Image 1 (cartoon, rainbow, N blue to C red):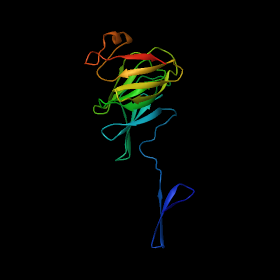
Image 2: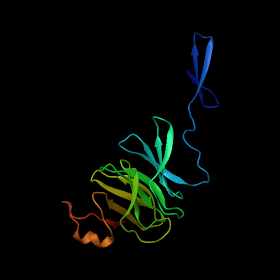
Image 3: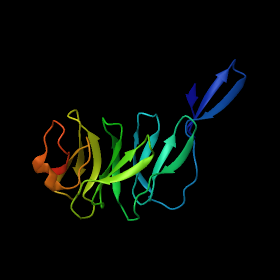
Image 4: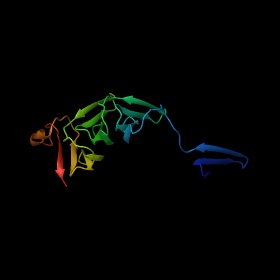
Amino acid sequence: MAINKTGSTILRYDGNIVRYFSQTALIGSVYADQSKWYGIASAANGKLYCAPLNATQVLEIDPVTGTTALIGSVYADADKYIGITSAANGKLYCTPSNATQVLEIDPVTRTTALIGSVYADTLKYVGIASAANGKLYCAPRDSTQVLEINSVGRFNSFSEFFGFDEFGAPSTIYMNTL
């Protein structure tokens, strides 16, 4: 087996037959426009999900069938979410860049919800990761603080932080100083 300049894998059988297999392929539907999604994460159902940067729906990719679908509903705006990760609760969460709330994606029901409250500004955060403590963390871009998200349960605003505990009280979204 060898790889040629075009990125195709070359297989030779008995020195007589040469077969070319591409290492890349375009799958799913064609979506017009540019800058629709930013970031990709896998869910427990085996599908992949892309955060809506400028799109009004989440892109769902089924790598088994090679198909795509649009799920959920997100308001129209520019540069809403940059980054996505899965959490221990089975849901996915998107980094608020220009958005003022975190986007929660439920891959089981194929729905979306806006949760928490983040101050209004542009290009606040650009990445998200799940930590061993069960919380999610967003990397600051133009923000001066890291965004910490407790993905267990629902929350509405920064003010709920003051009543939060790790034993089941309402979860919250808040910021830790760098």
